[in-house]
Image 1 (cartoon, one colour):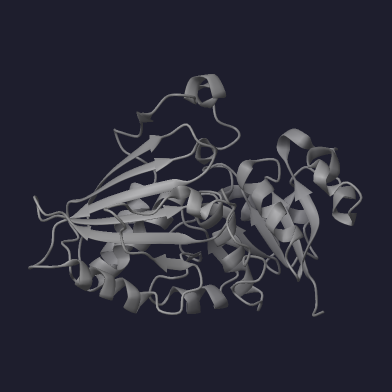
Image 2 (cartoon, one colour):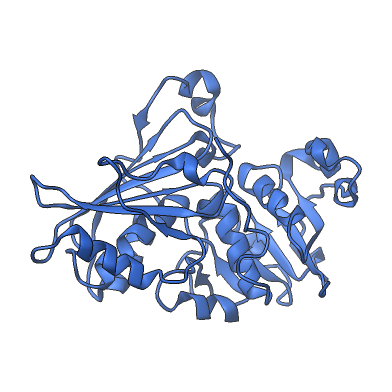
Length: 334
């Protein structure tokens, strides 16, 4: 066994943080030696997560987050609500690498945007010590659209994204609006006046296109625990068929271990359940026969490729591990 990588997790009590803990426990080189969770300070990890009973990691006591006291950590995962990580992470020792799963450092100077499969990003991820994980909705939407925008197959302006997320996408600290009684047997759109992910999506698409990109992004909350389905609509530049769409995606993602390009079957695209508990993304394409619009559909686990799985993929690259380490397990069936 090679040298163990000493890992800390801030926000271990939340959905993203607890998923990071689960993945780290199964990682061949990552050893969790520090855990912080605002609402669970003083508990052991085994008290919070009973499956860790009897394991060495289960004896670890959850602490308050004091950035200056993290010397000795090789890498810190920070899974905090947007707006809560910028200031404390600025005080983490420079010797500790950081993967910020929250939204405070996306496209901030000195931080690398960590959607690894985008052109040129992997090399940047390998070299950085400060990484901003992509948002869950952008991870799905951007990977579906990137080949089409990069190759100039679609117009980068006026793209429409209709995306739906499970309730864990709201975070454990969400209001009572997201409790079982409120979300069960219900479906609603939100962020209609603007959403925090729009600048991230538009900036990335603009970089890919080499010119301005604009999107109309509408997220929806659906009564399931985890998963995102993003359906994207774009205007073609010239006459396109399904084969040309798939050729662009297969060329961009050739050899990518977590990207599955799937033909539609009986007119159906990918299912969120195909991804549950994994870092996989399934992508399908079609040309709408009536409007001529291009349809790009992606399914991910919002806690996997949309958060903790992507974070671990980036951490692997940042610490010299195999990119797939700790992420090779199959999704949950059914």
